[in-house]
Image 1: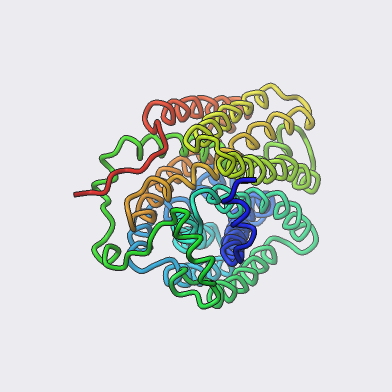
Image 2: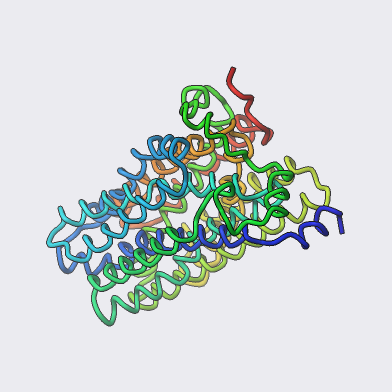
Length: 431
């Protein structure tokens, strides 16, 4: 075993409790997001929502989420993860309760817009926090701990919320997620601090984190603002954004439409549709943690070339995402779930590598800004996915065209990773 691994075994593990906290936050975030897809039929009964209206409603969250990505990144770099995180958690909690008491389609849209505002800083903030708290050789697993929660929330959230919906109705679903969000607010408020402010962080662990290449906290640099225009000029940034946007298109397509696909195309009832949906998301959770997280760090800690390992998983995992094309020809639940699991499993293996890249390549105190740029592009794709799918399904009465569209975008994303992002290495500091 390498000396670095032996030393790490003797170091306190406060940093891993921070990764777990961030993962819980993403889990709660995605309960809020998937609740709408679970409640589709109930909302249609209550408000008379069509496929196209539901597609727009599914994407409504992404509009404000997208528009606030760059401002969120700048605020995170200026004011820090803790202060921005506290405010955002309060906002998304209010949004869940607002959905529960909605009296019409307009109110539903308003609550989804508010949810997007509250959750906008989550992923850029988590990426920035991981950069502070973890050495480079542990960063993939730490990132996977919060990224995999996005998949795990669908694995457990969709069936749980489906059962709640079946027994108590859609309004209680959203009220429950509101109370869970308030509980997370209390947890984050009392627990999260940056390493320099955390009284529970030992000197030995603080030194271990710093020696491993963690992003330094630079208050003077943060006060000047992040170099947004400088980052936008870099081809690496655009390659990363294009590749990750292709992942997010497929992710949101499945997140918002998978239960409906199983129930309408394969004629599976609502309750079983919610249960079957958990299969690919459970597999995605495992590949996210095991491949994109643990395996990447394990190989790097044992001397493998870190750039080659990350590039292989990033491109290879996205290529596995093309398995979604197989679902276009599936005629049974088993066949559909196999191809969808292969697709989202491969994409999920690549995802934590993608989210670790901002903290690996960004100049000092601009991880939040780069994360904001990345998630802005992600959400453009996230907005397009449910809307495009709604039009395709209504026009063709089939999901095949939607699966083909996702595959084409993934091919474009793979090209972005290879020809624009290239080597995963630091962007030079601006002069």
